[in-house]
Amino acid sequence: MSSSLPPCPACASTLTYEDGALLICPECGHEWSASAAAVADEDALVVKDANGNLLQDGDTVTVIKDLKIKGASSVVKVGTKVKNIRLVEGDHNIDCKIDGIGAMKLKSEFVRKA
Image (tube, rainbow, N blue to C red; front, side, top):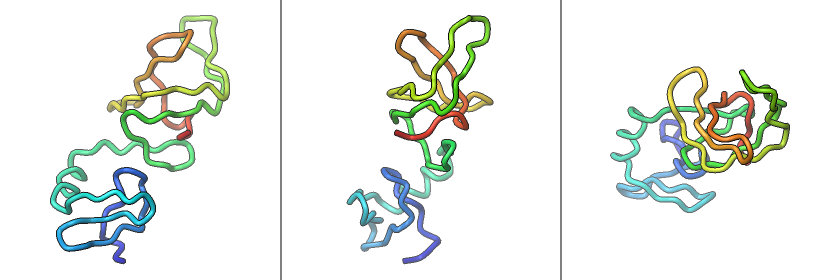
């Protein structure tokens, strides 16, 4: 196992290994081509949660701190699950919809991967 291999795009495991032209993750069984991994690394937006886990579009996250909503009297409570997130560039790098509140932008430092 070499540290120069990219982590698994499915589970972010660093235990990937090469098998011919494919890269394989022993933890989740995901297989992908090495050439696709190189292209994905250049274009990929890297967003990590409060624990350092890599986030991807479509993930479910949990809010780890009460978040006041600017311009409103409501609050996003600790433990709120947010499904199907979308990663965007900028200061608030998560676009999502929260049940009972609506469309929101969140900072990844206030969530953890569920």
